[in-house]
Image (cartoon, rainbow, N blue to C red):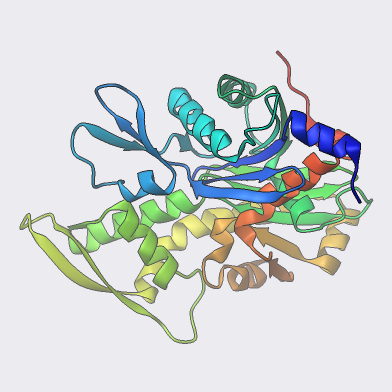
Length: 346
């Protein structure tokens, strides 16, 4: 139904929700949906300090740039590592999704790790304000993910989510619009990539780039034995001979490489369960745990967690989009979700 009020509000400003992730940045525009999903990468001209490419185009340059160009990932462990580059990236992304007819700068909801410090919180707010945003609201990532997958966070029922991102893993038990117990660890997809890269360096004297590491993880990586084990041929630089070399890897080897990193996440899940009040723990036994984030796509991660916790584990539909989808739902009905928006102090 046409609403003059909605039309007027949309014309004045189009409010947005941002999942500012270590690996990817996703943007949701009010009353439209998810409009952007690009890698959190910026390619910069070293001489001028100006961005040459942002997002997919910049990611293609990782490990392939000449000296005068630098491809940077400005987010680390779910928080800002390079303030100026994040500002450039946000300004570009927001510019892409902003309606040219909007008269006012947008209001933004942005998701942050639940273990974020006051300094890191201010860095996020300042980056967005410098990138041309009118007002900034913050929401803890696990709550946004829980809203995104449709968990009853406002009810007196225990809901548990494990959100495995690029830089952090957010584990939270929620009820009545709040986090009852949580564990926010700075271990995620990036640490998995690093573990694979170091394993290949140690065992094969082979140096591989970020793109190759990611390909190994997505094509043959797993957390628990597969019905049919996989193999993959990769190329890298032989550290002994100094020339390119091709090797064949097995999924069994990569599982071994990932064992320690995945073990840290499993331990953190168990710790969050131990801290849960008995009544909410009973709800989790009944309802199980939801997995979200890019790390949830690692083969058989859910099976490993089921074995370790004896609980039902469900991987969310479109796990990469849960956080931004949830923050979009909050954005569309800010009044109703007031209690879960984090207070920002100046």
